[in-house]
Structure formats: structure tokens, C-alpha cells
Amino acid sequence: MCGIVGYVGFRSAREVLIRSLKRLEYRGYDSAGIAIVNGQLNVEKKKGYISNLKVDFDGTIGIGHTRWATHGNPEDRNAHPFVDCRGEIAIVHNGIIENYARLKGELISRGHEFKSDTDSEVIAHLIEEHYKGDFKEAFFKAIKNLEGSFAIAAIHKKERRIMAVKKESPLVVGIGDHENFLASDIPAFLEYTNRVIVLKDGEVCELTDDFARFYTMEGKSIRKRVEYVNWSVEDAEKSGYEHFMLKEIFEQPKALYDTLTSLESRNEWQVDFGRITMVACGTSYHAALVGKYVIEEILQVPVDVYYASEYRHRPEIVEDSMGIFITQSGETADTIAAAKKAKELGYFTLGITNVVGSSITNYVDRVLYTSAGPEIGVAATKTFITQILTLYYFAIKMARIRGRISTRKYHVLRENLRRVPHDVERTLKMNERIMKESEKISRARDVFFIARGVNYPIALEGALKMKEISYIHAEGYPAGELKHGPLALISQGVPVIALVPEDKTYSKMLSNVKEVSARGAYVVGVSPSKDVEKYVDTLLKVPETDPLLSPFVNVVTLQLLAYHTARILGREIDKPRNLAKSVTVE
Ligand code: M6R
Image 1 (tube, rainbow, N blue to C red):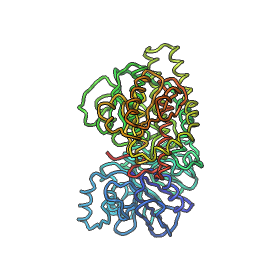
Image 2 (tube, protein in one colour):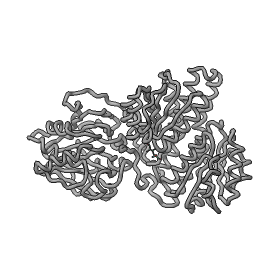
Image 3 (tube, rainbow, N blue to C red):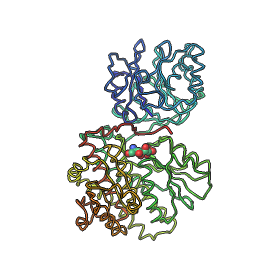
Image 4 (cartoon, rainbow, N blue to C red):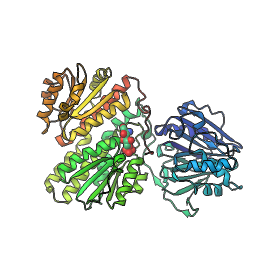
């Protein structure tokens, strides 16, 4: 899981590549490097952030890489780009070459010398092996030998062209005037062009100053459609916020509004199923759990939810189920593998993703896009909230189609959903109040999040956000489970964040609050009810909403709590240690 970029045109390649790589740093930041051709092939690569690179060469064609280590430790010699033995060819790679060990053995036996422990280096040597004066031909011959997942860009010292290929790792081309761009993700080149071509698996592209040509891996020409992306450069930058995460939290009303507008303009909903299986990872898994509560409540269809990495070990039971695969990036390897498996079992499959043309869209029958815009912070925020909105909308729409709810009820539920962006806007006004509360939380060693019903997944999400960016140990529990074990962890001053909506869980939640209070916990209530103040140490009073919609305001409160706690602790909020934005390894 890495970011790759390429540029050919009239600008300073050094500047374009570095600027583009910085926008991809969320994909990995163990090491970085660039290669530029200017009569000779120049390479600079280093362990650590892109800012560590000292590039004292320039040109107008080059490639670059930011790495999240899989094969080989994060060290200078394992950083990309990799070059062939003669120092004429350079490549960058995102993905895993599964047959690299065999290829490396064969290449070594033919005299090639390797300098890294990576799987990727074989690509440079393979191209060299096939090079007989025609770089393009050598590239096509080399990629035929590769197994696994890859987005690769390659350049040759004597050529003014970039060759690239995509298989199961993302790759997009940006079309300019007398210049062309290549990247793992659109924000990389958005400041230069909004004309985009998304490559599909098995497609190759050839970029020069004046054209972008596309082929199958067998070399047959193909025509591709240019898409116009309406994200602004500001959308992909921080716009004055200290961190992308905070900016993205504050963008949630707009993201919700845009997603709802797009869902409401969609006609294609009809599908038959007896039950639903939802599969996802991390935050998207929590969205699936919220979806379970909402779909079972409104649509009255049973829903099973699986971690994608576990789903694949499940016995192959064929059932009258529809599969929903949720992944904001659309690139998560576990979720894609699960979607493939469900398809083989004959399920009707639906993908929910935020990225147009991402890999998951190739493996599902139908796609629902969230319209959150680019999310750069590793911690998912606006993509989560738009995922849950999409699942609410799905439940309401399907319930109406199946006659599970009256037309009147349908309109009431839709009206309630339309108020959600406004409710979230009001929740964001609590920012300063939450910031103050975070002072106390930042001194804690452990934090517990408790809730019941549809807010239980929000407790899990609050805990995930807290541990992911603040590095404070945090756990989410169904409040009723405390007495079966976790209560033993509650002692004097341990913060417990209790979600207490005014719904059927209200009185039971208050009993659980009393349980932890009696054991000395410092209880932060998150509730629209002023009455809760009597039972907690402090109340974060959230806006009143329809109780079924309380996850929206509650999750925003917990995102801000995690954000400010991490900020007070001086953490690398947008790039937490050991994590990357899209996880393309299983
Ligand atoms: O792109 P995906 O939604 O498939 O990503 C799944 C998880 O890796 C992701 O949700 C992760 O848990 C979040 N970055 C946490 O904030």
C-alpha cells in the first residue's frame, strides 16, 4: 500500500512529483523517492517522510513513490524507485508481486544484481531482461510475467514516455495540455488538471507530453473515457484547518447533503433478497453494524455483519442473501476478496464506496457512491457518516418498495434524514466545549465508551478513533455487557463516555451509568437530555434528533473528542503511526 506518481510535460518534474507525492502521503510514509530523466537517469530515495528527500536534479519527466512497507524494512535501500543493473530503467510499484521469489532467482541466475529486499525490484530487472532497444515492447513483455497486485510506472533514460499498468491496485491518469500525469489517487494532480481517466484491472497506459494511450496487457489499443472531477484543489487541501481530520469533520454537513442529493436522484433500487450479509473492515465495519440495526428496524430483514478478514474463512453457505461490501477507499484487499467470494457463491452484490472507479466497483453488481469528497486524514470521518446515511436511505427506500412502511411513514423518514446535515452542523458548534473536555481525557490511560442498540457501533467507533489517533487505550462495549467482565477495569477517575439517547435504551443506560459511577468512574454523558446531568460528572449535550438518527450527532461528538485529545497530546493526527489510509494487503 503505497502511492505512485508520474509526470511528463513542460514543468519542473521535481516540483510536480514532490507536490503530488505529498498529497499521497496518507497512503504510506515509511520512505519516499523520485526518479527524473534529463539525459541521464537520476534517483533520490530515503527512509522516512517525503520532506527528507534532498533532490538536487530536475527535468520534465519522472516518477515518484511514497511507501508503506510490506516486503523489506523501511530503509533507504528498500525505498522506490528501483533501477535495473545498467541504471537506465526506473520503476515505482504499489501492490505485491506474489511470484517475486521465483522471478528473482531466475534473474539472479542470469547475472542480475539486486540491491533491496523488496518484491518490487524484480520489475526493473525484468524490463531490462526484455529490453532490446524498444522500451515499450520490453515493458509489455515484462508485465506478462508478474503475478499478484500491481500499479507500476516505469521510465527509461533514453525515452520521453512513461509506461504504466494496473492490476488490483489503483491508478489514474490526469490529462493536461502538452503534459500528462499519473497517480494512485486523484488529489495528487488535482491542482494541475481535473480531467481524469481511471484505469481498470489489466489496462496499460503510455504517457508522453502530447498523448495518453491505453492498451490491454496483450497490447491491444483501447479507448477510455475522460471524466471531469468536480473536487476543487481546496477540497483536497487543508483550507486553513490545522489538520485534514478537523477539516473533514467540519465538512460533514456538506458531505451528507451531497450524498443525500445523489441518492435521491437514483432510480435503480429494485433487488430481491431474503436476508443481507454486510462485510467491511475498521470504521466501515462499524458503519455496517449501524446499518444492521437500521435495516432490521425499518426494513425488517435479518442482517449478518462480518469483518472482511473473517468472512473469507466462513464456510461456503449458499443462502438467499444479498451481499453489501462497504469500503470508503474501494481498495481494501480483505473487502475485495470477500466480495469476490460472495459473487462466486452467487450472491447479488452491492458495493458502497467513496471513490469513483475504485477496485471494488469491478467486483460487485451494483455500486452506491457516497459523495464525501476526498478524505486525506487516515482516520475516517466524513466517509463514515456518509456510509451510514447511505444505509439509512437504502433501508427506507427498500422498505417502501417492499411495502413494509406506508407512503406517509416513508415521507416522514425521508424528511428526518434531510434534517441530518443541519443536526450535524449544530453538533459542530459544540467544538469548544468538547475541546475543554478533551483536556481531562488526554491525561487518561484508558477510556471506555458504552452504549446500547443503534449507538453501540458508535461506541466502538468512538473507541477506534480515540486509540487510532491519540494512542490512548480505548474500548467500546455494549453497556449491558459491563457487568460480565469489563466492570473489573473501572477504578477511580477512569473516563467512561456514555451515549444516552432519549429512546428505549434510556433508563437502562442510566442504570449502567450508575454502575460505573459507583465504582469511581469519571462519566461523560453524551445526550440530548438535560436530566442526564444529574447522573454524570459532565454532560456533552447534543442536539435533539429522532432517536434512530442519534448516531449522526453522537459520532461527530466522539470524533471531536478523539481529535482534540490527540491534538493536546501532540500526535501526528493525519498520519498515525503504523497505519495507512487504504489497506491493500490481506
Ligand atoms: O477504505 P476502507 O473503508 O475499506 O478502510 C477500512 C479501514 O481500514 C478503515 O475504515 C480504518 O479502520 C479507518 N481508517 C479508521 O479510521
